[in-house]
Image 1 (tube, rainbow, N blue to C red):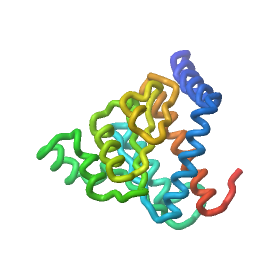
Image 2 (image 1 turned 45 degrees about the vertical axis):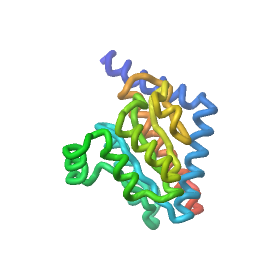
Image 3 (image 1 turned 135 degrees about the vertical axis):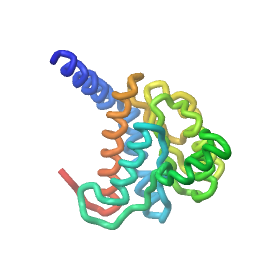
Image 4 (image 1 turned 120 degrees about the vertical axis):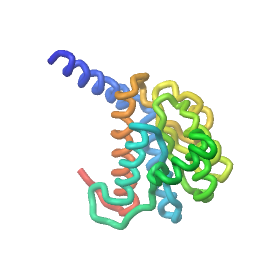
Length: 194
C-alpha cells in the first residue's frame, strides 16, 4: 500500500512543479494560441512519438479530430505512426530513424505544426522529424522531460516536464495535452468550460 501511495505522490509532485513553473505555463499558453491560429489558417497538426509517447500522440490527435468537451467540427490533426504499412516499409528499406522525417517531408506544408513527444528529447526519429519540419517552415513543439535533450535546441517551443522519470513525464505529457486541447477548443469555437 505504501508503494502505491508513494507512486501517486511522485506523480503529484511533478505536477506541483509544473504548476509552479511560470515559464512552462506561459509556453503551454503560447502553444495553445499558436495551435488555434494554425487551425484558423487551415493548417494541420501532426504528432509523433515512440512507444507510450506514440500512444500519447495518437490520444492528443484524437482529441482534436474527435471532440474534447463539445460536439463541434473536427480539427485536422494526425498521429504519424498510424499507417503500419508505411512505418514498416520505411523502417525496413531505409531506417527507423527516418520513419517520421520522410512523412514530414511528404505531407506537411509551411505553417503546419509538428508536435514531437520524446521523454529524453533525444529519440533519433523524433529529432530528424523536427529537423525536417523546420526545413519546410513547419512550427515545432517538443514534449520532453526536464533536460529536453537535443530537442531543446531545435524546437520552436519546448514543454520540458520537470522530471527525469519516464512514467511521470508521460503522465504530465497527457495532462498538458489535455490542457492544450481544451484551450484550443474553447478559443477556436469561442466557448468556455468551467
